[in-house]
Image (tube, rainbow, N blue to C red; front, side, top):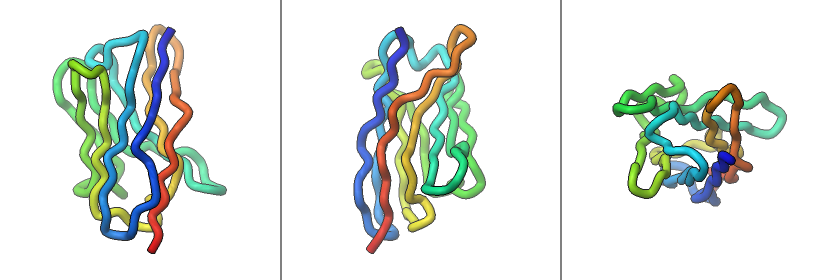
Length: 116
């Protein structure tokens, strides 16, 4: 059974940084593409970043490019999202997600609030 658990969210001032973690069980993160999405109040869930299976290929939404970095730790079976130069518009619940054996799997999310 695939389980994804996000952590690392919190309250941070504009310009600050946070590192989110997505710990996986029931699947090896190196074997699937792993995505981060976010959903702000009153808005649809949107794509943030992706790390491809196998190698280290990555992809980012234009809104976070140059500020966020997605990475993977094979030993800890965890995918990270390093978020720098945070802006109030980054406030959202952040979710990680994988598509595995025909099913989309989501974690429960972690809240990120950027405010002074």
